[in-house]
Image (cartoon, rainbow, N blue to C red; front, side):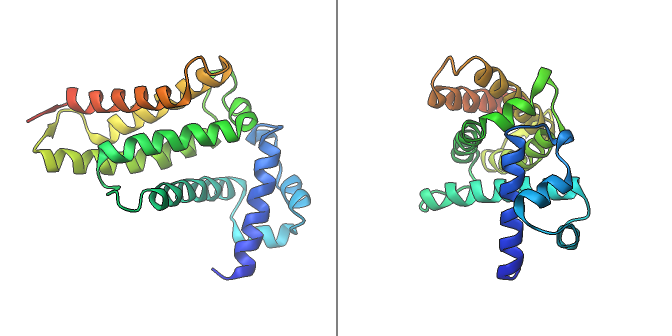
Length: 195
């Protein structure tokens, strides 16, 4: 991707983040995104099929950026290991929700996952699924429950837990929340497997 295309995408993504601090995804229009980013609608449509393709690519870029930051800070750590990956992914999701508190609160209204959050769940669950499968293969475990089921169940539950945590004004420290989420995931995997 050339520099102009990256710059255009960055401006559009930044506009989306700003708008989602004030509105839900359903309330945000392409016109608003283009106006705030100073990118023309025609340019928008050269890069994206529609609003949902745009949002999907935004969350894919957030996840990629999150993983790049995790890997850069832990260059000597193997990220294929579930026990290493899970706490860092959980900490990254918590940090993202704290940084984008308005977006998270608006898009988690009334306990219903919006399209925005569903996309984030999907991105995070894919990474966890791969690590669960590798973890089980390396330890000689066989799962009674598919890894994909465990990862989606856990990730969606974590997103709801983050909603509760944010709306309750963080009743426990972020580090403790991350540790509890990681222990819960490991327990799910262990309880669903046999040696």
